[in-house]
Each structure stands twice: as C-alpha cells, then as structure tokens.
Image 1 (tube, rainbow, N blue to C red):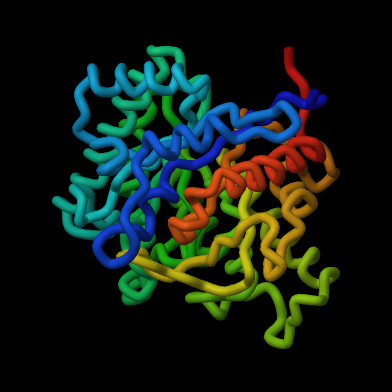
Image 2 (cartoon, rainbow, N blue to C red):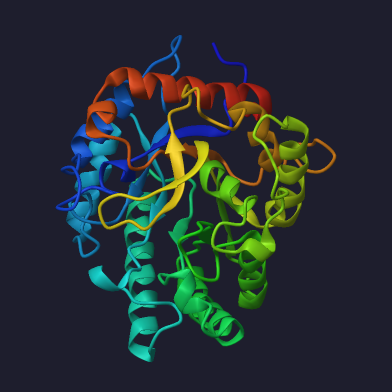
Amino acid sequence: MQENNYPKLHNAAWPGVVGKGPDSEPTIDLDSMLEMTAAAEVDGTGFDGIDLFLYDPHIDIDSSEDDIKALAEKLKGHDLKAGSLVAPVWPDIGGGSAMGSQEDRKNFVKQVRKSCEIGKVLREEGVRPYGVIRIDSSVDPASWAENPAENTKLIAQTWREACDVAADYDEDLAAEGEICWGGMHSWKTMVDTLEAVDRPNIGFQADMAHTLLYLLGYNAPEDRILPEDFEWGDREALTRGLEEMTAALRPWTIDFHVAQNDGSVFGSGTHDKTGRHCLPNDPKGKLDIAQDAGHWLRDENGELTKAFKHICWDGCMFPNEVMTKQQTWNDILAAMIEVRNQHGWSES
C-alpha cells in the first residue's frame, strides 16, 4: 500500500502518435495505449489515469458529444481518469501559428475552444476531475527570431484570446516548454511570453526531458545556464542549474511531466528535434528522476507546492517495439511511484 495518494499518476496517450506516421513507424491506437496503461502494475499500484491527445487517429477534435461520452465510458471501463488534453493547434491539422496571420491566430483559438468543449463533456461524465489544456506557439524558433519583440507580442495576444475562451469553460492553459517552439525555446523566452499574456489562467507545463535542454541553451545559446565546459558527471553544477531554472519557471508551473533525457536532441516523423526522451532506467539518462522532480514539486524552502493534482509520464518517439512491451509501462509506473513517494501527499 502506498502512503501517498497524491499527486495522481497518469500515463500519456500521445507517445502512440507523436513522431509516428508515414515518415516513421505506424501509430499505436488509443485502445492499445489504454489497455497497456490499465494493465501496468507495481506492488498493487497502477496508473490512476491518462492524459489525451486530441488528434487523429486517437481522438478527432471534431468528435460529437456522443463520441466523447463513448470515450468516457471506455475510460471508466479501464478504471482510468482523463487529465490534461493536448490541443491540436498546428497549421497542418486545422490550427495556425500563434504569431501568424489573423486567420492563423483565429484557427489557433478555434482549436483551443474545441478542446475545451471536449474537456467539458469529460468533466460532466465524471472522468476528468483535474487537468489543463496544453498549447504551444505553433511556430519554429527561427521564424520567431526574425522579430522577437513583435512576434512575442503576437503570441501573447493569441494566447490571451485563447485564455479568454478557456475561462468560459473554467479551463487553464499550459504552455509546454520545448526547444522546438518559437518564443518558448528557452527558459527566459518562456517566462517573457507568459508574462506578456497577463491572464490568470495561463501557466507552464514542465517536462523534465525538455527543460533539461534549456540548461544547455539549444536554439538559444544566450540563455544557456550550464557552462560551455560542463560535463555530465558534475552533479553539483547540474543541481545548481536546475535550481536556477526552476526558480524562474516553477511559479508558473501548473502541469508536470515526469521524464528522462540523455542530454541530446531527437526528432522523428514530422516532429522537429527536441529534448530526447529516454526510458526511466536508461543508463544514459542524465537525471535522477525522483530527486530532480523535487525541483519542480517543492518550493525554494523544500515545501510541497501542491500546484496540480496529477503528474504525467512523457516519453515520445520510442520505437514501437519498446512501446508495445508491457514491462516498459511497468518500469515507467515504478518511476512515477518513486516520485510520489518522495514528493507526494495524502488526501482522504
């Protein structure tokens, strides 16, 4: 029996889709992701839920209410809750650049609205007691860098409009920091963009694998925290770097992904290069997962922030051979449990 029952432990559905497709391996369908998630077990503890990607072939953003109710019943059948939802805000699937044309930005906000509507149905069906709507800027860093000040203003304006829509549904939006998204590609640009939005329902989605790359200044050398001659064996310097970065981003953090990274970048399919996810037990992993999660889950005084009710595993672009092994998900669950053992709490 686990002493702590919060934060709730979620798997992610999107590794079955992200980086897959015609340019890579076949996608893994949602039913398979749900079955493997529900089957994971470590000493009597399983996943509490799953975070979802509102994108074909998993979930059509234009699903009917009956479709979403059927999804809710499917989740209930697996004894899983839904958590955070990824809004498909990208131009090639109906969205648009957050700093693009008026039509682009209108489409971005439209996709957020549709995501909120799906989230509303899942809440009403009793399967989504917590979670956010995940967004990004839907544009690359090089395009943003052509005019940083003006482009940051445009992204903030689009996010502000999306926040106003989300507020009508009592939803919070979380921007996931990845080096592949313009205006979010470094810890400093991420803070600047969030501050410019000026809405109470905007926050940061921290992913341990992606944010590790912030320390190295990928796509933003001027914002590098670790020195040029840093070596991964220098745990003291790494800890100082994590402390500096999380001090800036933790106050914004409203959603959290447990993950591992080997210090490199990777992309597959149509996904741009970003922080490379590793399995939790990968010997090349640079993070002490449970210990380093504490930089995000505890404040500068070591006190739990309790800023969110669930945490989610994220590990995209693994080979299907790895993802279809049940032991993979058991190992991931074990890492999640250890994070909760060290940084969780108990509620009745």
